[in-house]
Figure 1 (tube, rainbow, N blue to C red):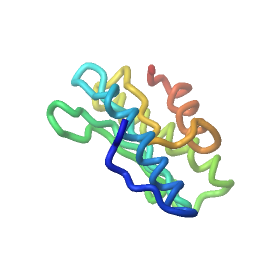
Figure 2 (figure 1 turned 90 degrees about the vertical axis):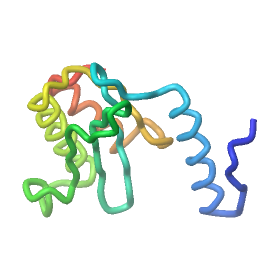
Figure 3 (figure 1 turned 90 degrees about the horizontal axis):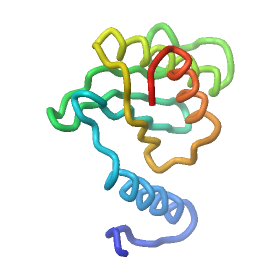
Figure 4 (figure 1 turned 30 degrees about the vertical axis):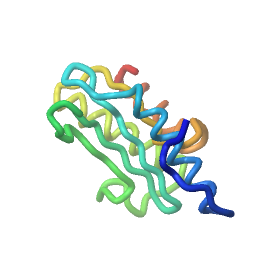
Length: 127
């Protein structure tokens, strides 16, 4: 199955593989008003989370390591990801969201991605 992503060398190959995984995941996952999509985007410096209703095309809640309450905080990147997960869950519950569909964005469910998801679950978000 062709996904329209060219294969290259080195890091470009890894980016292309991640893009293929993300496309494969997004074919099956979509956010609805009852159960929006929790999107996690990870970079080398930070982690970003959004709760998105794909039907209406609106972001219901978001949090990242760039937020004033988390920025420059103590701990490693996994600890910061936990703070982001708790914050996005709190904001989503304030927006009336009880359950979400988790979209890891083609990344492996380990490390910072898993820390964010676990913290969101502990804060009361169901997925």
